[in-house]
Length: 405
Length: 112
Image (tube, rainbow over all chains, first blue to last red; front, side):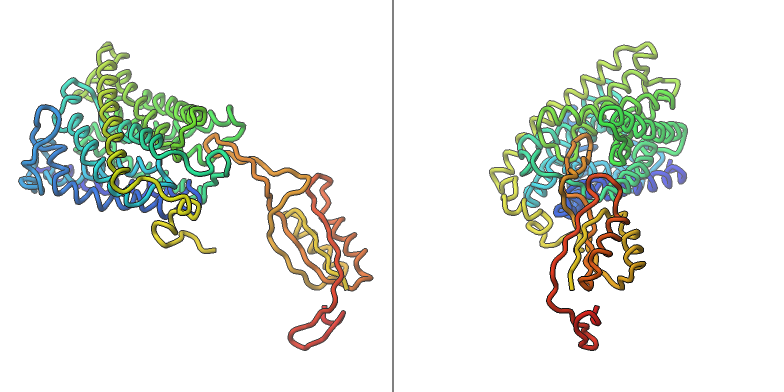
């Protein structure tokens, strides 16, 4: 039975999640050098187009269609056949199309997140191919594994709003991409000065705002669970912003604006898998750990020496993994009876299942991302020419500039 | 006539302008410039990556004044721009052959 309150809430939630991708574009766009601001923004923005087409043609069906061997959906719902105004199997009180649209927004932001890893040096043609192939060969199967009736869901792993599907997944892909495309020219020699950190803070704020749709909306109805997810999302993000700036204050001597914005995003990432399964106090703890942990992960990146330009690995990979583990620690059926109890509520098995699910997704994602990058390299090449990189991608790839002052 | 170029700390611009007004200097041209001398640059930190930025912002003032005024101008700038710390800037003096007011065609001191 369609419930108009739930439907209204889910339509608004879907729109909120859609808004996260332009928010991400600004978040990333402010951090690159001024010669690459537009190329960075457009890589996120155009995912709104590319993934929408895929989703209608075959994406939704492969991710959520009738299960084939716990690995992938079949093509029964290709071109959204049978996906209409009446409720589908995933949410009984909203039209199937609304669920489909809500999930589309998640599929859009995931490849957009990865763009931070190869920012400032990837050809636009290579990026377009990457977003198509990666969405098809990595996102759709892993989304199916967790939410579409696949094996990770079946072993009992909890992923409320996409800690594994979106964040661990994009973080691992980012690591593979950063290693394969190589460092930006002048890395550790030139100054990579962010062109506009106020824009980055605006982007982080839009992400935070949209995340209420992402997490509370993942309850799929406007009820108790949505309320829990809404509150845990807020307090985790806030706690992580605080712990990040404290960590950098202690380790580097100054609290920074970029740190506060990055910390908030880290806290949002970490609470994502746990949002509807944990209480507000564990959520504060999850955020506090996430802010400091992701900051330390960036320190380690600088030590390991791979050029993950905008720290997708540290924020989404590490933050997402911590969130998945934390779900296994703090989940409680007193908060959400549809969930499970975690380690601190007498069920040590959940944390093992959480880690198993995460590692399964990580291994598959790493392998497939490697193969996809090899294919693209053979077809069109991945990396921009030296001249184009020095000139900036805005001019060399798009014949435009972000600022003319 | 001499041209006086003074490179000073940006936050001292208002003080210097006021001091020059007081001794009768009626116009000046300024530029926001970047550079370094004995004062080293500063560090910037983005997500823990420290960069040392060598070129730091300064303001360059250009004034053309009658030769006999030069000592007074130098004195005024030094008084106003001095903080006692490294990086207060420098003053350069150079000869000017001619000055012409565009509107009237006046030349020399009366064009200043």
